[in-house]
Image (cartoon, rainbow, N blue to C red; front, top):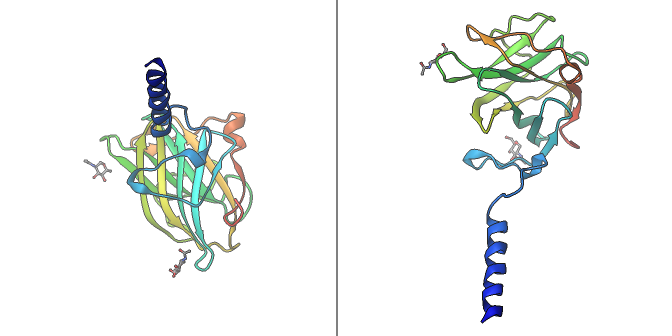
Length: 190
Ligand SMILES: *[C@@H]1O[C@H](CO)[C@@H](O)[C@H](O)[C@H]1NC(C)=O
Ligand SMILES: *[C@@H]1O[C@H](CO)[C@@H](O)[C@H](O)[C@H]1NC(C)=O
């Protein structure tokens, strides 16, 4: 009788462990998206609690991406490609935040200087399917981007700021994390 009960308990915990995510997700590959979105590759970016997920189509040069990053409900996040150089200036971004009316905003914007307008703009590469959502203290930006002049190889830049005023994202902090959030990305190799 005792054996039967113990076996039942073991089985119960085994089922419990396999059916639920008891441990917090440690890497991007464990992340489950809403609406059954699935991506073939991902990167845990080294700064700002950010992750990039993508599926690259090498015949079209387009990447279907999901960029997600930790953020409070009053802050903003952005993911960008810099077609010209490494770093912030010249990068072409997708930015997302909560509007003052509570709905989410997401749009492309050009980072033309260290003090950009952060208003909607037109990027040099194609952007489609742009949407965003907020859940579990993360903002996620969904889009299809590209093709890019350099093929699968891009300079990516990502950023976050805690303040949005009059529906315009404001200057981010200048901590190490904010200044080092840039790097080369090869959509083919990850
Ligand atoms: C890439 O895009 C082309 C053109 O839209 C499409 O025919 C093809 O199935 C896509 N490849 C993959 C792997 O999705
Ligand atoms: C919230 O504000 C944005 C920007 O002005 C607007 O596009 C959107 O329709 C508004 N949403 C609601 C629910 O009022």
